[in-house]
Length: 166
Image (cartoon, rainbow, N blue to C red; front, side, top):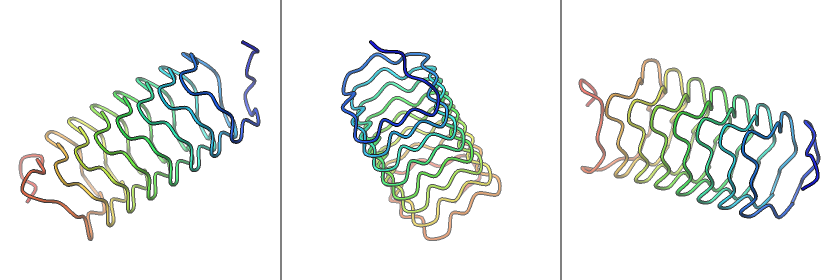
């Protein structure tokens, strides 16, 4: 495979199932790219544009997505365990049944995001914007929600909250 350089323009690229483990995609433009089932574990996607990207079932364990633009991205069933999503824009993103255990989502924008059935145990959500996020069946046990905006959050009896949060 050709080496991908930081800042690369990969808009609408079909990288379905690609092996991009530890790739340096700093500031890459992956808008509307298909990265479904791709291995992006430990990749550097800091400040990358992933707007409307398809990352369904992708492996993003330990990836650095700090400041990434993921508005309207499809991350359903993605593995984001221990990923750094601090200050990322996940507005209206699909994170249905995503594994976000121990992920850093501090100061992230999750406004309107679909987190139905997502595993957010021990996730860092301090200062995150969860306005209108859908949390049906999400597991937030031991998550850090200090200063998070929970205004208008949609949840149900299957949502599991950290101790002390009602």
